[in-house]
Image 1 (cartoon, rainbow, N blue to C red):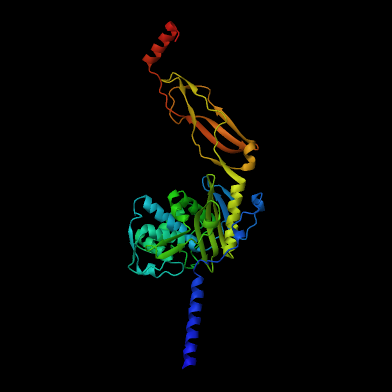
Image 2 (image 1 turned 90 degrees about the horizontal axis):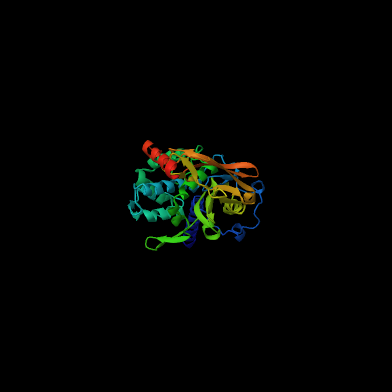
Length: 402
């Protein structure tokens, strides 16, 4: 009997171990990473010198959307939980348009509670405020919370997935198709690319308040009884990290959309299908560090203040020219000294002048190559004088020299 009991215990332990191994294939691996992964070390001098283990990758600057580096960026691959960038984006947009509120109470369905992989073990019928659900999705990549909120917004996960695909099309994500809102299920039709992930990641971080969630390292839910730990180790160990989302399944490999900001410049590094967690963090860190080291944002203002332009027959004698667009441009730091700015501006105008009327251009060049052309326009409208006003002015000029 003792031998039989011992045999049954051993069988039970082996079953539990095997089950845990199967689950781990769907969970974010929480391995200890070498410190070198997060040290900046030697940064490549040019984009051509970048050598990263990620099979597919891209580096984008947020403000301008400029692509600095890409590697197989249009190859369709499974994104695993990086899928949730779109899920989070739709949640954020629904909050901002008033469709839902962060104070909403979300009730968990049986379908949501059945999700495996990374989860916070929601039970059918359990209720949780939306802000807590969002924290679970962003920080711990909780599949059950993602489905629960998707159902709260759209009524069903599949209806929410239709919204995801519609939004992807609006963002120009031409190589993306979502079939679920989590990335947990390895569906051969659930595919995207590094470039498309960068597009939706950029759209998400334009909503600055989401960084209150994406920068959380550790937190709790359920009145402090359940701990959350961010699957994105860069949030803890990389200077300026602002997010964004990790992903892993056995077929997708180790994936990451990483964002970081320093000195007012923010970059998005996406890496897909890496062999290890260390590879994905090393690849993303290398891309981000290159961006910070090599590029900066410059506002294309003229070197001198734009002078007022005389206006003939106007109710005002002058109009002040202004730049139509003051958006910054991304330039290499090594090119700043060779940047030139050429202003072409009308010498005089005849009324009427409309506000926003084009008066000239500002051309910005680097090394003789044009990098930006900005219209110079009228800052205000200047109405034309009426005949009586013109006669009065002529009278003053002829008899009083005014």
